[in-house]
Length: 568
Image (cartoon, rainbow, N blue to C red; front, side, top):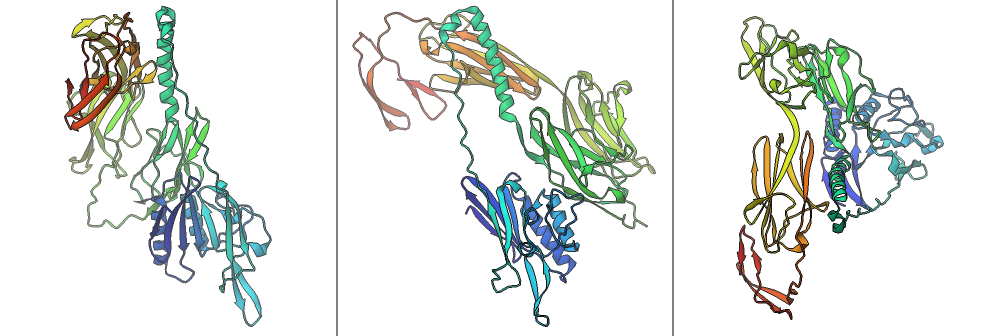
């Protein structure tokens, strides 16, 4: 057992790991008929809070006495209720279904075909008639992963001295397959002597790194999911969802498990995963969710449900309602030539929104469009459009500004990269032969918006710092980044293809060259039986057996935990 959380006498949770599979179980005892409405609402609020604390990709099972009849009607909730449910639905059953819809769960008792005696979970004995006159299916298993269930049935012969019968579920736990570690590509350095093979290898490394980035991303988890909202009639609301995905996923909004109704005057989707609803009406109330589509993987993913509740507007007689702007992203980044949307939305049903630039440059009307309630759209972005913008809501009565929102607008540019090299502090052309014992400094400079990151590769393998190889002189601004790869006391083993790969959200760039250290004839052999014993944090005793060659001396690099290096 990994953890246990007992909330109250009606809800508790346990997390288990079985065969490397994590299962979160929530045990429940719902308020029965006759209990107050507030008590029932508190139960489902507590249950929802615990459900939301569990990571969505875990196997979640909710089990217990739910005290509700879900009935046989499956219209619109086929993913919640199976073909073999029984009885009629009541109000408590509606609550169970709403919870399942919100959390993408299924009622597993309804998916298995058995005779009725193996479906009823509760019986009431009638002493006068000497028989069971009432029965229902209220003890349930709910889950977000149907594939782990093999069977759910009632055992009618076991009463446990209760009017409830034992309900048993069989699970199928499959041990995850161990991931096979991919072999790293190795390159024959002798091929680098051929100029055609050298250029082909250089292009291969650039492409290989790009596809490595692509495959390592894939499709991830829902980072933003629709949440429950309560909005007064006539106000506005902004719903959002987002899934980590490469390539970027497209999104479709669903309402009550159907396609979003067309309403161009009040529904506006400024960008993927965002839905603005203005002048909210009672018919807008319902369950909203997102469907994310990854075209490259040919897969679809559904988010959890978020419930939009529309309530009557409060009596404002004698009180002036202070309208405000709804929260929107304060930074917008797009590529050159793409469409950009600077959102602006207010809860005023008769909005008066004004856009200005903070540098007081006029906004070109021929380059922008107003959409939705007041969003500013750039159909094709160029450098002149970037800057800091203000959206201001103005009072129609006093013409005074009520609220202002600032948005920073940036055009992303893909990286450009350039390599340069110096040997023993002397600038030299790339591909210059370097002698043993010299020092080499390779500088990678890259430009882009935002500033690109830098990664080093040697012969196609990610390069890391070692005793003689250090990353130094790091320098960066908002649009520039540079870094040196310093190699001290060069050796023939340092020969290879060195590549600087730079990345930002706009793209990838790479530059590479061959560092060649010619082999020197009759080099002395290294010492043998080398031993190092630490004396203190800055001293070490090093001993060895000399090689049979006539060696006049050795150089030892002593690397401390502090950012300095000593020669002994």
